Figure 1: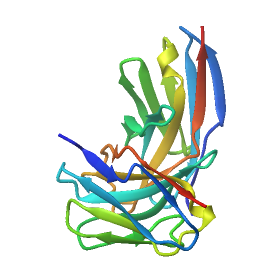
Figure 2: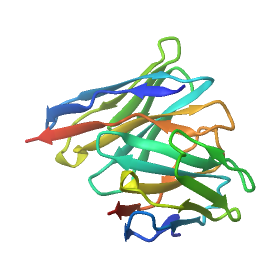
Figure 3: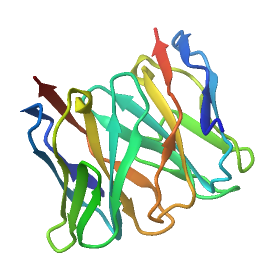
Figure 4: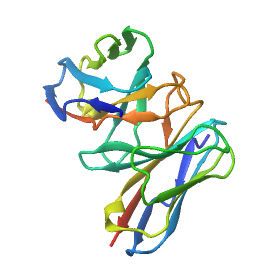
Length: 114
Length: 110
């Protein structure tokens, strides 16, 4: 059982380039999340999807877009990368938003924007 | 808005007991959970409190007081491998997302 899989693991972008971070889970979870983690800032929620077909903004959505492609996949797109988006990005999933259940995380994507 | 406050760093020695506190302000609070993250790794779930009181899982326990908007993680019989970052996270009202505190770095020395 792979759990939550993120690709790529590492990426270097130039300012202004675009890219899509991919996330897939094989646990039949309803809810999926994208977080960014910066030193001293903890995990900040970018976007989440409570169920297939829905997406909502989190704490820091500016500069990002998401797509819940199907129940398994939730992608994060940077349309025009900026150095401020240099971070570690984590995708996570839970059985259902709001229920007492654990979140499973992918291994992260380390993104550097130069 | 939503916010969770926890100390930035805690130090302890092997075999000791340490408590990491978390106070929260969220609209429609649903429950508090705790996660552990080792350097360079993904966060992993430790425990969840949906009701007031203590939840025990091996060497780790977690406590919640809704009336005080407060919870803590208690780590007993500390081991070197417990050196990591610990995050509290709030599930707010059903249908909304999981918000994390900034994390507490625990350093365990021998």
